[in-house]
Image 1 (cartoon, one colour):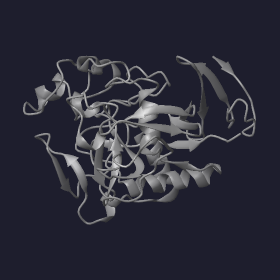
Image 2 (cartoon, rainbow, N blue to C red):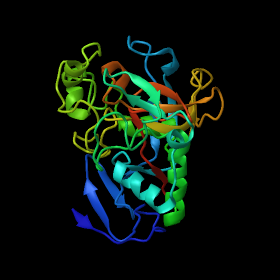
Image 3 (cartoon, rainbow, N blue to C red):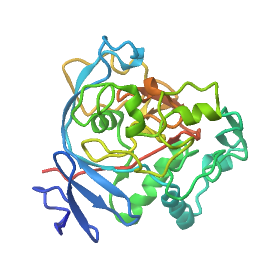
Length: 314
């Protein structure tokens, strides 16, 4: 690992400097930007990919079809890890912010003693129904909550932090692959790539479907405990699902033809898109193409987020 100091305006290298910036190699050469909260963001290069699932995939849901070509026209920085409880606590401490689960009079959605998701006043990001430490991903945060976090971080640093679009998220997850998961198609290998519904979860909650493997965690794990993908991103297939910018439209792919450039869906339903696998999902729901949804005002015990930052253009 080498340490490099290059201006934000150096468009040749697309490396950003705060106080330090490390240049690392994960697969193809890539760069990591460390911000004032200690969040590591990896450079994701612009490119094209096939978004969605092929009709040959028996596990594909109708909203993943048809598979179509998408171009991500600008490079971006994407969090190498999901935003942690400790990082979210820094935001709350600095602003006094209260999440929707703390102010809506109903509470958030949490995991009860039977592993069922229920809404109750006791469930917030501080208590999702199971124990967490500061290095675990924050959960029970709504889409509105995480957008507010991004706005605060943008003001703090003078940069435009945001959520990734759904297309950016899948492009980053696939990291150049066409398979069900970024590493291939073997569902049992998920235990090496992410914290998903495994035998430990099934032991605790026998009615939950699970893969035939053990990843070491029933609920959330500290971020970055599993192997990264080729872009150096951790937990894309597991730990917690992640909010994206887009509104969820089950027919979003239907009208796309040729190559769609930087798609962002802003109409179609009252819900927002969630992407990625989680500790509660079995293999089918952890695939790179899998689309999920939640009401944007709801926080759940299996959903968090990671931040994005558009890279400088040339």
